[in-house]
Length: 482
Image (cartoon, rainbow, N blue to C red):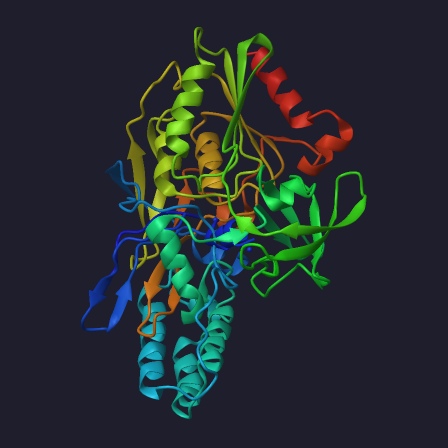
């Protein structure tokens, strides 16, 4: 049985980076059982982290247009921040490294294999012979494996799909995610989101959250994390940073990073409970043009904060133009980002390709927008860059393809698939890419990311060094001349 999904494209992989520090919204509704298959399914989380050329190519069919009013993925849960787990999120429950109940492992393996067989978004499994996977690896489980060996086997199988979005969470780490879903607390880390950059051998800081350990140690947006405790930070097989920054509250991590001025520093950063501060920052610029930076959609309260900030920007006089800065937004929850989107667009927004459908079945989603203080008509520019992922990326892309806004900055990463969590019999979790969206322009966002209308060579990390934000300057000039 499938449950409703959250179109939450980075960032469970970034959630972990955020909260336990390793994308592109998490949820914890009660799972539903499937008595026939013996598996449980949780609602979806959209994670998005790195380009997936093979899977992206598979996901761009010629659409058979189906009209659907308000055909958006529905978030029925009340989830907290977004991004995936590749390291211990809380003090783990240690399982003995001994041979365990083989029958339970076989039950888990079969459920794992069947979920991918039935629900994986790409029917060709990205060229992997999925039947051969079962024939090859199930006998190894039958021979007897320790818990860690068994979990490592499932993790390696998922890697073979060559899909940066799908991943496996072992039983001894899964309870941390469930606790986050239940209460929104329970995680500690240094308080940054990271973008793995295999080509550069580093991880870019998308957002260093004020008030947390990394920020207090001097790490800022756009800095490059090089090593943690002497180990290179990048990258795992899926392109994500290694999770060396995870650890219990009160512990420390020795971080070597390079700032925009090319100065390399090594600092000791203390891990603590993550505080989400400065989610939204606003300013009134020249000619009564409003500026708003939304750093994340992980904050469950971001929609209310947006409403308050938007009203303040338009009081006592409505804006002459609006600049939305998503350069540090690595994704988050579906509902808040959708509700913000409704303020600015009206009508068709994208095609939604659901799992289990024929490749040529695409549903065109339509929404009925709401005008607040001229939000539907105010001239608009959106700033994006390499750290713009998941729901941030989808939101910016919708504004561009509907003609609502001009995109300025640098191309984004391409992290828009929806990932659905499936509870397995032994308590582990499989996060599997199950569906995606395709823009009205039929461009391949998953493979190529967003293409900006105006390219700015200056990187986000160079702004502090240059003293001038070239993308923001260009946005102001465009809006002043409209």
